[in-house]
Amino acid sequence: MSLSAVFSICRVAKDAAGIAGNVFAFGLFVSPIPTFRRIMRNGSTEMFSGLPYIYSLLNCLICLWYGTPLISANNLLVTTVNSIGAVFQFVYIILFLVYAEKAQKVRMFGLLLTVLGVFAIILFGSLQINDALIRRFFVGFLSCASLVSMFASPLFIIKLVIQTKSVEFMPFYLSLSTFLMSTSFFLYGIFNNDAFIYVPNGIGTILGLIQLILYVYYESKSRENSREPLIVSYA
Image (cartoon, rainbow, N blue to C red):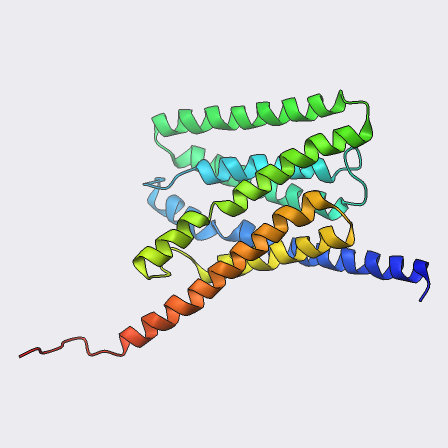
């Protein structure tokens, strides 16, 4: 097989993995919809936190910027998935602001302005770097750190599942979407020879797999326990 044929196969595989990653990411983006249906129905944010949406917006913006041709080459599908993600997070934040109490509203609005300010600094700061390689490394390390911290956030849920021996707080389809998206972009990064993509998504793949294993294990335990009679006499 010629070298050009190998490159062609890798390019097709990379695009296929990137498209799959975009599709699976959609499952993550729509996962908060039931929460916001409840918020809109009750007219209150209740005890829900808006911080995950603020942080996700910053993560999407940084990764979106990394995927543009000004920073890295051949990463259009990274830009598309994070553009869609940023729109979803922005809509969630606006809805949260509408239904939040005044004190929470002021705090969320301040955090939103902070996120936009930080991203503006990263954007304009990186454009001041004339060396394209250094500029890519600067934004790449930021996007990688942001992704790793985002993928590490389920560690709390994993700990909670083990402690409670219940998967109540770890929705299956959310864990599955995380695993499939991470795996897709891990392969995408491998085929594109981009460590800033395959390293954090490799970590995400491992953590997603752990969540799925825990779900299967504790969900099967729950089924076994549910077979016991509801009333047991010890007399």
